[in-house]
Amino acid sequence: MTARADFAVKQGTTVPLTFAVLDGKGKPHPSLKHLDSAVLTIAPTAAEAFALPLSVKPGGIGTLLTAEQTRGWRWRWARYSVRVTVKGVAAVIYEGNLTLETELGA
Image 1 (tube, rainbow, N blue to C red):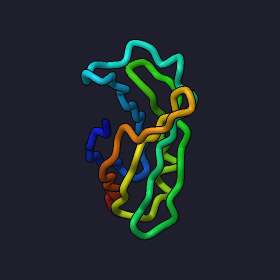
Image 2 (spheres, rainbow, N blue to C red):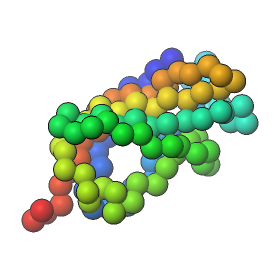
Image 3 (cartoon, one colour):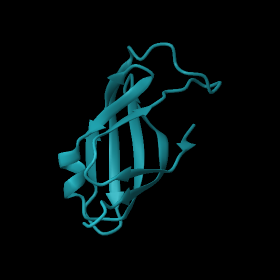
Image 4 (cartoon, rainbow, N blue to C red):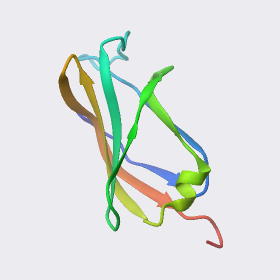
């Protein structure tokens, strides 16, 4: 099951991202010990797509987008997806739109 969620990131800021991994009933999965890998793919409309590895965090899987990373982004809008692989089976568990809010005066 793929959940759809849109969110925004402010350019030049550090943002922790966490995606909850849900079971078939929509409840937080109790264990992520069988997780082989997890990747956040961001595909901007005016730039090359790129992938960021996700790791197990309290509450799910996630990463920390640093101010240095987001400061370098020059696009305004992107599609994103979160793909996990468990016991060799891959699935997209989240997808949606990502808006980059620019810094004032930038």
